[in-house]
Image (cartoon, rainbow, N blue to C red; front, side, top):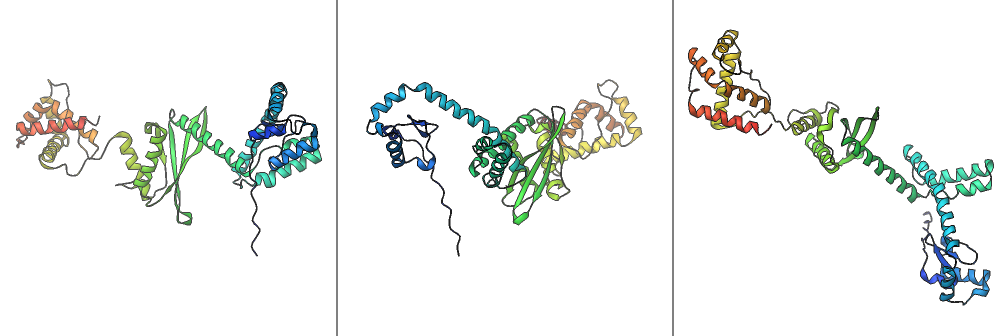
Length: 370
């Protein structure tokens, strides 16, 4: 047998036509001008208001709109004080509503617990310990399912905003975790930073990876978040992750992609093509010929006595900026190097103007990455 469906009560608000029955709007609900009674949601109906007037204030039946409009004008102070009383009562229950919503979120309980469990428990305890007045006050704390959901969303958005503001100005580190529960790829990113002399750890964001979960997918999600929040990547000083290929891969691992992006550096290509590759290989040969032998290195210093620099920089399979520094030093010691190679009978086509111009061209291009 199917369970009976629960009807959701329709929320009703004040309408201008209610004035003809002697009701004015207070906090979007009708209040009687004669007895200050505020109608509940169930009673906000034209029939109910008319019935209230006939039973409680029969002498005012049929007075019309103009009469009650004038009466409303001569009672502004009374209405104002009543509204202030309502606002004061709401202010008292607002903070407890947020505190209870926070507790429910921390224990990962359903929002409906506020109305079905917490509120009845508070009222029952207040009746036994503090009395009916306290219980009546606690019963006004808004703890409906929608209210708690809204409170939790507001607190979550506030925390996210504050974390972003801190990360925009402070160095931080990030940690990654992933989950494939129920065959759904979820990326979890946590952040650690120092704020007000205290080490803080917070959840930064959670993203669902719809397709693949390789390093490039993770990199794109992180970059999209940082760009949307205007968080400078230069503030990122450390990355903690597992040893999965998606994070530490040598080709498209997240760490490699992020490091290359932050410093605008890329590994030297194995083949840069044509005469530029030939010139670079010849340059590497010449530098290694000088630096790999201590005798050659001492001889070369003698050729550099009148120069600002006395030695070449040793070449290695490093990044573009390092190669740029090596070539820059080479250009400054160009003529001493040619003289030295001629002296050592190692001269090939290296002294040609075409080769010299090509190496200078490589240097100019590398300088763009500085």
